[in-house]
Image (cartoon, rainbow, N blue to C red; front, side, top):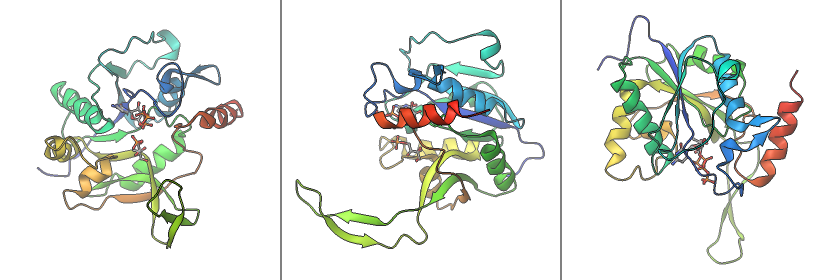
Length: 241
Ligand SMILES: Nc1ccn([C@@H]2O[C@H](COP(=O)(O)OP(=O)(O)OP(=O)(O)O)[C@@H](O)[C@H]2O)c(=O)n1
Ligand SMILES: C[C@](O)(CO)[C@H](O)COP(=O)(O)O
């Protein structure tokens, strides 16, 4: 498959089918109210502000019963698909399959972005697109490791085993931007193993021997994961003009 196309389009694919078990919320964390609306709506609205993104696709759990807002709050070019899987990788794989079945060009770009990263900014997404649109592989937003990195010993009480040099180590964020067809193929090749070890799109591309581009992001683009993260997200979103 050729990796170049004259006028590829850009899609956003938002995996939104998780349960948020670490967040300790009564409903899946992406639907928890943050700064006046369900967290995922902040994510959708940030991506909808990116002019280059032609279409958005949210991947929901097949038994999702969340009542979604319509009208002005919902961008018309964003569709919802009830094809989520048991893992994030499976949700993304199923979403890509649905996009291809709907006629999306395999050479279009897809920016996969966690519903739970509600603090992403349109500017950061645009930077990723600008940096990667001529790249033969694609890339991801990521953060050079800011802290000292330790490994732990075996045993019940965590104790330091060693300090790992942090140079050249990055924390992967999203969006992660790849061509639709190659990403779908890369995930198809690890589907039989239950997507073992595939915690992001880049790791699937790496298994193909490819080396995705690292684009410096911001610590603000955190993934809301633990209970304390909600207060941080709320404060940042409320401080926005
Ligand atoms: N089967 C799954 C699991 C996760 N996700 C999505 O992937 C993103 C990142 O995953 P994570 O933050 O780990 O979310 P959860 O899996 O919901 O959280 P936890 O691991 O705490 O249960 C989230 O937007 C989540 O909704 C998904 O679409 N399908
Ligand atoms: C894709 C990701 O956001 C990169 O940091 C992250 O790996 C997803 O979270 P998970 O807990 O691994 O599902």
